[in-house]
Length: 117
Image 1: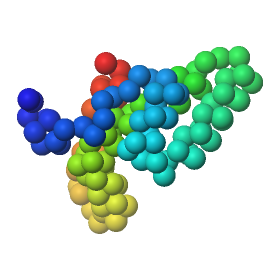
Image 2: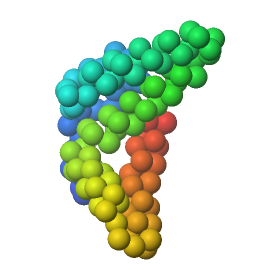
Image 3: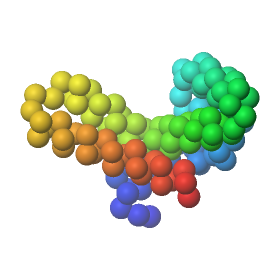
Image 4: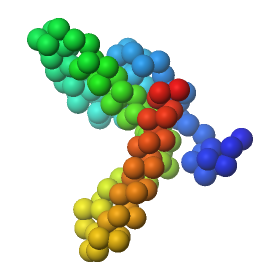
């Protein structure tokens, strides 16, 4: 087991396939309150893809929700991200804000690496 896994604990679910069905199932398990946002975003991505004759909106949709799942399948990481975002909203100094945003960026980059394989 890596140090990272020890700090964050075991994931609630494995990282799903980056498909609408795989992500929908994962979100239903780890963040069911987000299902309406997921469906709405999927609808928008499909409409944009059709209107623009490109799959780019669909790829962006899959990446966004893949990273969402990567973060939220570890409750400790999701909680830490929420805490950092809240603290950044009320940071009183540039140094504090910089430290907070740096850690937020680390979490987001880690989720992106997990999704990208």
